[in-house]
Length: 300
Image 1: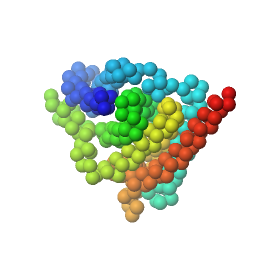
Image 2 (image 1 turned 120 degrees about the horizontal axis):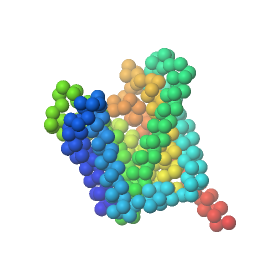
Image 3 (image 1 turned 180 degrees about the horizontal axis):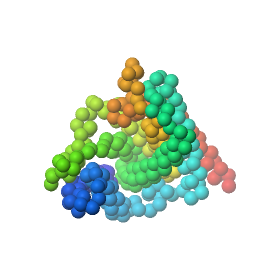
Image 4 (image 1 turned 30 degrees about the vertical axis):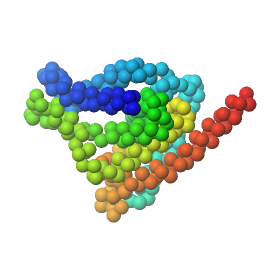
């Protein structure tokens, strides 16, 4: 469990850096730039995580391509990423379509969008999806997964990375007005960004859903031996979800609105059910794919 402890400390250290350095950084920047206090804090946490990640990866011998999940040849990796992206878009589109069919989404705000605005939204969300997939898969299903798997086995690696994956999604934005900022505001910012975790029952549906998503991605990682497929799936899912977020809002007047979480208006019981169903299909798909690959390699 040494690897897991190091990565947990890395996340905690990033939050500690936010608490300690956001106020001094704000004092330096505020006279010249109108950056929100929380935005400065988030960038400090991201920088702290990046520096710490590089140090931890080297210390635990996880800085090589294979350990980070990039062990496949470039052409193979890109091809599998593309297949995963297509599967991610198709499967999450099915989930979104089921939400529409159940009357859970309100698309009235999309009426004011022209074709150009929709195209720009789709393109920007694709870039966001690819960025999220790259960062999260490299850190979680890349280095963290490899480190835990070496020490404790595949099952433990799948379980722990999935829980951490879900937990990090509840570190949310928290705004502190400039007039209320003090020397203790960095601490208040961290407490505010973690406030949803203080009410576990209120986020249980989203937490279980995201944990299940993490399990599916980690299982795909274990089958394929790299992060290409998972990165593509992850990017495709995020892409569709962000486009839906941009064009609609949850219909809280629907009697079935409990199927969407209060956390983000998308994950929840409905997506959890779909994740189980689609996860079984993806497991079978990638198992067959890897079996065929092994057979073809034996015949060469």
